[in-house]
Image 1: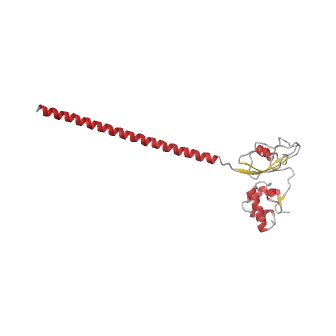
Image 2: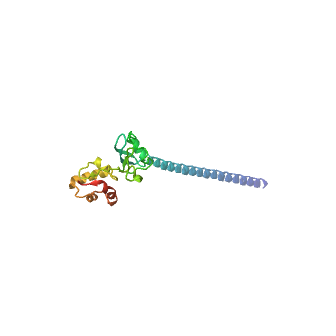
Image 3: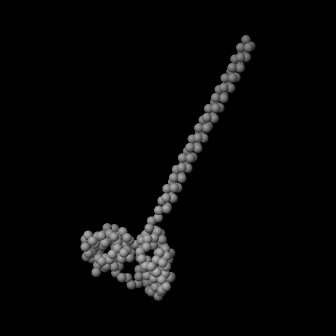
Length: 205
């Protein structure tokens, strides 16, 4: 009888030991799965952030451009394409710098340029009509005949870039000469605000 009881006690202890060992292994397995899940989530999040950073980098490497006409006391007058946000000094450098007779302090070289702008540098002693707008108008403005000017000449007008100049030439080819200056507003993209900037610089004769 004692032997039977002893054997039963041994079996109970063995059973409990096996059960405890099984639970421990299961817990370890669950813990291992948790670590895999956490690692996978962190890796996925890192990949998404890297993709977002790459997208921002690609976008920032695609600059926009503006077209400006640089004239007056510079070495190489002409129409130049510059990065958006460029300043008057960038336009000056594109045109080869000041000519020998230039007034080097009349224009604020830190001014931000706009698409279609005429950047004018006066010669020494020249009086500009409006000091606050130095760099955009000459003291003696020659009117541009919108019925005969080519695209390059039209681009010397404030607010007129390459696209709008081409549209004016195309409109004139299809519809004939402009009867009056106000007819310029019939060209696509030229509304009242742009026309107001142009009115004093254009003619039809």
